[in-house]
Amino acid sequence: MNAESGTEDRSGNGVVGPFGFGAANDNNERLLSFCGSHNLTILGSWFCRLNIHRWSWLSRDITRKEIDHIITRSTDRLLFKNYRVLRSADSPVNSEHLLVMVKAEITC
Image (cartoon, rainbow, N blue to C red; front, side, top):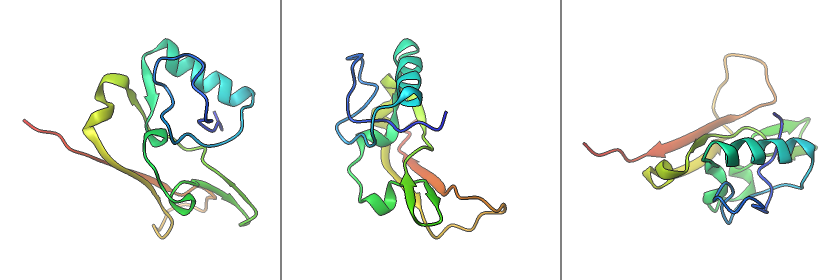
């Protein structure tokens, strides 16, 4: 969707957490609407991170955006303990996108 999470959750459903990022635009609104109607949350917006661990798309080191997301059911959000973008991860393809990693704590 090439959308940022934004900072405002107009749905009131917990789609965006307190650390959302980016400016509102049409793609952003579509992402929030989809997540709100399916009881989903944008996981990265619930974690406080340095911008260097937030931006998942870099265009010639000029434009930086957080447009790659991990989306989960709202009820499962608390299972996740860490979320960040790995800048040094090697990619098998030539891409401007960086690897997004999440750490979950699952108990049996």
